[in-house]
Length: 250
Picture 1: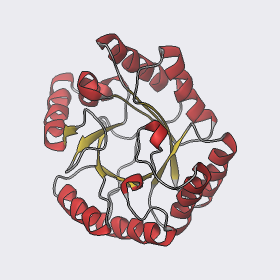
Picture 2 (picture 1 turned 120 degrees about the horizontal axis):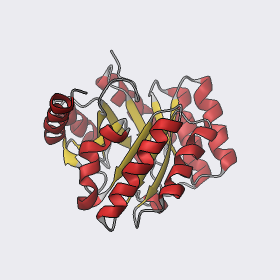
Picture 3 (picture 1 turned 45 degrees about the vertical axis):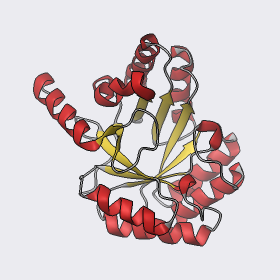
């Protein structure tokens, strides 16, 4: 049975696929599946043929077919939010996301809040028509904005009609890590949709392990290759989640 973000008592473990060629992505997928993640994210911004919609849709369908019941997140991370530099404009990326909603059975599509509101709404409409869920995301790879600013991002995701709200930021101090966790806890209390959050890099790695205690529904772990700084190997995360569950009675 397929797992759903926001259900259950502990965060789901998501592992990224970051291959540049189809063969690499499928090899990565086979390796990752052996480690039994709860969700797989295909970071399509790493894919060399991202400009060819037919190839992207075909590979997305292949990934979904092989993954079976495991939910898939399709993500085109923009360069401004820490992704790879790609030739697609923001509008073209939205159109590719819409094609994934329309032509595949992939469960989740990531859409950045930095997109134009009308583009975001356009994608939400297509997603609803095809029973695809939208993860509204915000990333800052340079610093951690204020708690109020982070809370506003979570709220904005819900106001935009997304199904999941995601915030990822870079800490410069341990206080920044506490800011992210505190904003996550507030969002968990206030929002009707699930939240995902993380503080990146070495300082923030603790949030990938204990973020679930504060309300984060997903933690991103290394299956074969990392897609962001501070990701922890899936085997280590499994162990940490087991200990938290056992000691806290979650």
